[in-house]
Image 1: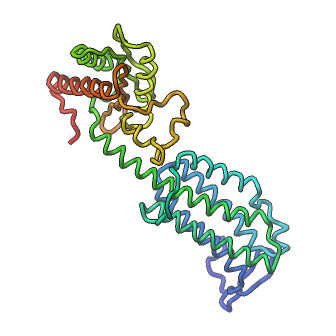
Image 2: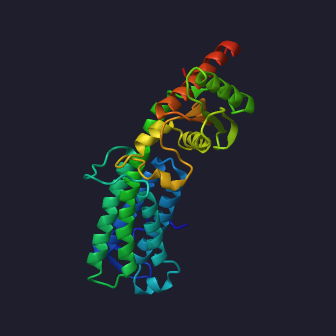
Length: 336
């Protein structure tokens, strides 16, 4: 590798790929320097985001920006030697990511003020820098040919940053709600077993027999797969699928289904989520996640009565199991 400093630019000029030299104050240098600036801020955003899929997308975008910067930093001779360039497929890929996030985002009803969390703030900063890249490219196109796909790409990538920033904000809010909901979860053994699932169901049936309504109770494991299930004699057949759906929903989203239902209302942050798992998610109360050390190991779903009755039986069953196990095994299952 050559030395970091060459001293060839000390007089205020720099070399382009292809061999020619221009002044460092030239619009062309300003343009590819702004592209580099945008990529650097995206790197900070990438480092602060925990979701691996989002990190992978930002990594791919940084590679695109490297190619775009190389193209801008080349003279005519250099551009002819470039093997890879930003292409229309890269624009389409950005559009696909934007459309996917839009499926989960709540309708935008006001201007966004950056700063809800650090990751989204960096994404908004990157968005504004990439908009500046677009403006620089448009200005540069008055001096030399610029491929239209580059202008399209920088328009879309800034849109992507805006959309991802909103998604990160929404994700952060959901995580906060989930943490609050999990604080009321039931703390149990390390793994969902058939014996423990049967204990839960037995406690639920006992609680149900104290009233006038008969229920279906379904317990699933951490993957949403049924472990044990019981239908009381007079429980409706339709309640079987609903109880299973509640258990699956509570496991998949790490939230009580009554909370999911609130978040899925029009204008709320999970509006439209039922379309992601057609026929599997149930958006009303009666499903409760079951946890061990803040990790969901399964869930209980109850159906047969009103929503309030289903919730009451689910909570009663789990609370009775918690009390029995604490006494029987001498284990404090509550969070410190």
